[in-house]
Image: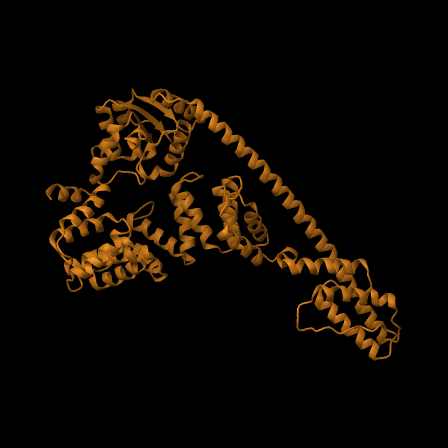
Length: 554
């Protein structure tokens, strides 16, 4: 009963609009405190979900139809699931609201049948706020507590945001100050080195070396200090009036004692103090002084892996410092922080795109894939499948397996490119060779059914096995079917059940149905109707139509 109470709002949408729709859904749930019923993948292709949809619409009081440009491209209105949903809601006399998510005008077909229903432009934030208020009114929701909680949450968010901004400003100021100190120290070290060269040169022409000149030979780095000691020792051995210089063990890193002794030999000059400061900081954290981009990236990455709290701005600062010094992977991580609003960073899609492009220019394949994904899904950018293909191609050419698989899917389905299953298979092969399980599973299907290649069941078995060994549930189920049917391998029900079990335990409904069949008929296992019912029920709960029929027959 509690589940039904939470699902008084039904959302109907097309799968291609998932990102935009889920953003609207989250806003409604936050404003109303009500859980919306919405299919996670967009129900529009499988009749086995009919009972699930009917039940959800029967429970709802408000039916939100997410209308978009994708609805204007429907060729057969009698075979579109979203239209079936709204027709059923209309028959059940539900309150129907057309929510236009991309400002596309209603086609004449929709206008004729549904033009009298309330219509709302979701691109207008004020209209969305009005919808939330209307829903609260229709569902008799007391909004006073929701508003109070929302106000407190907003105040807390602003407080944290201000605190993070202050921390960022302090960190930036500290970084600039440290960099300036390092620059001045390096400049003094350079001058000291030049002076040391002058001293050695003057001795070669017979000039005596004074204590003041020796004091000025202090340098910034430990290696330079050893070199100057060597030079002064050479001068002293040749008879010059030089101060004795103690030799140090050059096979170890200098201790603080070594540093202080070096300062004592060379004189407590300002340069010597700077030398001690820099070396001590270097001993604490070399990345602070030298700002090596690889060390900065490594620091950020390690901290991100072990971080358990939100808002750790230091992670972002490490990445950004490395990125500014030309580290491609760090550029990609900076972009992800901006696109997701992670670790206290304010979300900014334009900055994210800029950093993605910089990373791509510097050869980073992951950035090209991430930017392609944004354009494919329309997340924080205008959806553009052509651009998605462009960036997926860049990533795929740089041997990123997930991009190769994604690009193969575009050619396999003919999405914004000419359908070409031969090209699709070529990309699947490259991704599969790089160990990508989903591509290996898809390559198995291509060989089994002859998509883009000649049928070759032995090749299909080979690729199914590689994907299944990596835990790919669909490949495990398909491999189980091959053993159950004796397709390409000797029929072996026990082996089939072994693979069905692995896939079913991951929640793959087709494998759960196969497990039910195996227990019902005693194939590869002892006949057990209780076990059969258990597995059929698991598959039926996910909408498997045949599993529901088997349950009714048992």
